[in-house]
Length: 360
Image 1 (tube, helix red, strand yellow):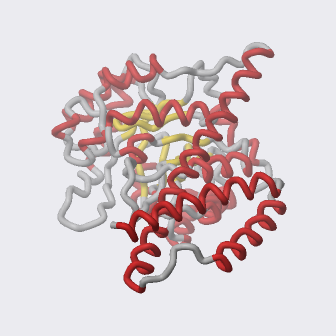
Image 2 (spheres, rainbow, N blue to C red):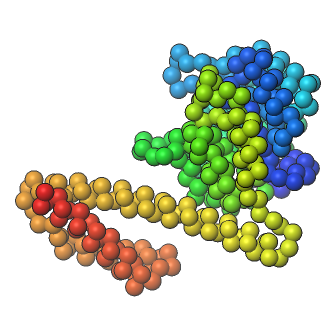
């Protein structure tokens, strides 16, 4: 995408003293609920009031949104509080209705981003709009698919663009609802540093008590803002109850988050240092997770060797791995000494795991 700097203009023009904040309920449930939450957020740092009108659900039978009538409630929010409004769109009909009701910000969900056909339909429907359009990452960790959707919108003449990082689906059991895959978000920023990037800690965590930590990590990684689901009675919300917080909690989180200063050389240094350290923290966590998965595979090998009464140490296999990894490490700027130390330690831990199984 050329001229990506123009995509940041809408955010720069807001001249915010803090990161962009998009907040509101996962779903618009009733007119009373929508307005009550909006009034509680009126005098806070919230810049856009979000509410899901149409809710794509994984399986039928769950609450799928109130539909178009909810757009009238959002109009009342704007009239009564002055808050700008935001909602998700997933097809041309949604776009037409949202524009008709003067919704200020439209976002495209992860299930839509995954389909180039849907993205093209939305790009055609939104062609030339002056509304802000944000694109959530696809459910699978595919950077090209994410960027491709944004490129379709850019080609359609949409200038006020941005992206939302909401995490990625995985079959593995983790503490997250959707694993953040921070490295992919970092690569996104490296590719398009001028494209606003918003973090969605609600969908990443799936748990309200983790929202602060993920939000802080996002800000440490220079994200431009946060989208946080907020409900006056989260436990009784009609959708995604566990990940929503009260307006009071949102205000407290915004107060507690540390925003890096950029007013002098020392602050600039600390900002860059914190960013790099946050990246290292993310990668280190990935390393530990990967090593843990490797040892699970070693356990499986140990079980198989036990069944067949085969020795733990396979010298030829070990030498082949070591030679291959030394070459791979050199191609990535890693010294032979370092690779040897690291893989000898990994190999020894693997042997320990298998020995334990054989002795059991």
